[in-house]
Image (tube, rainbow, N blue to C red; front, side, top):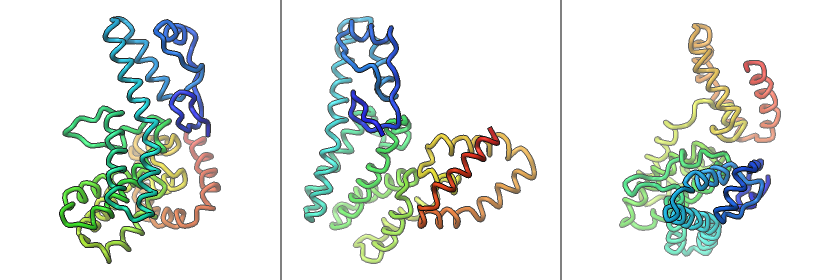
Length: 277
């Protein structure tokens, strides 16, 4: 993993800022490194594209800088929330977590009537944030269970958790914890609703998702494309899909519990992808 010199986020690789773009950014007073993550590169291109119009550019640049500062500040809020959870200062932890989620809403320009979704994190540089968001919603789900007056917030946290958990490698761990917590919860109905929704929305490329630990991975997308564009068009392919859906969930669950097998499974799947490609 490499730290992006612009946003500080850990990413798999960096992308070069080409000469003309770098020159234009320098003219606009936007000092940046020659290599940044894909998300930052997209932001820089937007800044360069809106360079005509001095006032508009200045406003856009100020907004971008504000979003960047907020994005960097999110880490301390999550750490603080977890520390407060360990100290059983649940109300204070909830405030810290809610501030974190609010920052994400601002950064991704989420409308007031809308909520955060996994789609907001589709850029490869930010997909790892999905696991952090999931852990925050899980903590909020338990915090809001401490008092009946937080029923609406708890239900919302459960709904959001069901959306995000399916895209993370901690899916089986959260499900197991939720099943156990239901027995002692003050509002078990919310946990049962979460478990039902999370189960219904579990990604259907079971083995590949478990092996690569995220349904957003490039390999999983290739296999889904092959399933939809090739296998579904033939009777034999549809039969294979039927039996795959029937038996693969149990194997994926076994794989989640025995993660040491995942490198070998990933190797096999990459060979399969090479063949179908």
